[in-house]
Structures are given as structure tokens and as C-alpha cells.
Image 1 (tube, rainbow, N blue to C red):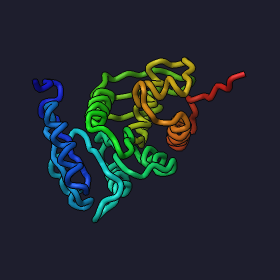
Image 2: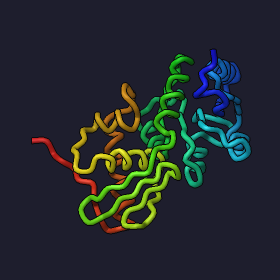
Image 3: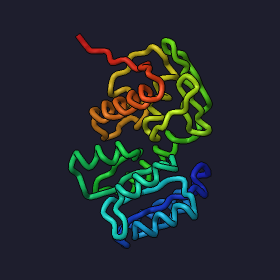
Image 4: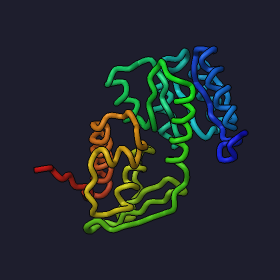
Length: 225
């Protein structure tokens, strides 16, 4: 039985191993997704512009254009959810992918069922949220979940999807002190294998974006005793 909430949602699998790509497509289609595949990085960029999928499953090592370059170029114009799927397991590769705006990171080998579960989790986390606003000190922070836009003191911020979601989580509960683990659960999802230091990377980038545009710092770090 196809799940209605996913029926017709488009997922583009960018993977140069044809057997692996086909397995992922088949598993996604079983749950109602409209899944397709592309093996070349340059062709994948054209496919993204033409079809505008709801989510991208992106391998890093690709012919034509590598996955990190695709992600970097994509984030200049699009907030489409991206799950990086790769055999590159070094910590620096994970951090680079996340800093560029990946929503999740899965290392090979993996279970196709796990990949589908991650796809659903990312889509749930990145679906439209109602607009909220809150005051922090002298600044007014506005979050528009429908347009994926954030403003501080009326000025629009240039944020990656993860930075946007992180700011949204903080604004929803102004004044609350969050642990790294709580922010991981709120933005990346409960049970995520993302390391806690990733939160520090995104907080640093988020604080820099706010300070550059507004000379304000509404985010405070609370040190434990």
C-alpha cells in the first residue's frame, strides 16, 4: 500500500553505480515516491533545474562534476533538501558537506530501508512551517517558513537550510538554553548520527551571518560550571 503523504514526491538519486542507484529507486517507489536516477554530475545539475525534485540523494564521487561542487552550486539558488550518500567517511568530508548545506549524511555501505527512512525524516523536518517571530534583546527576528526566509531587524539573512532551521528552533523558544544534543534532535532529528560538534559549526556560521548584516549577536553561549 502506497503512503499518501509521499505519493508523487520527487526524489532524484545521483549515483554513478547503476545497480546501487536502481535498488534505491525501487525502494523509494515502493513507498510512493516518484524516484529517478542520474549518474553524471553535470547532467544531474541540468536535471535538477528541469524537474525540481523534492529531495536530492547525492553521491560525492561522480563523473562530470563532484557532489560537493553540485551542493555548493545548488545552495546558491535552492533550499531543496539534500542527503549526501558516499563512501568517503573521513570527518572532514562530513563537516564540509554539512557546512555547504547538506541536510543529512549517510555512509556506504548502508541499508536501502535506512536510506528511505532518512528521506522521510528529512522531508518531515523540512516541510513548510508557520511563520513565527520573537524578540531577543534589541533585535526583532522574523522567520518565514513558507518562503524559507529569515530577517533580523528587517534585513534578510543569507542562510543555508540547516542554518535556517537552527535559527527557527532557537526563535521558537527565546531565552531557552539548549544543549548540543537538543539542537541536534530539533534540527537533524532524534537518533541522528551527526556529531555534536556539527552544531558548533552551524552556530558559528549563523552568528557570523547575523553579525555581518546587523552588528548584533542575539545568540549567547552558556558555559557549564
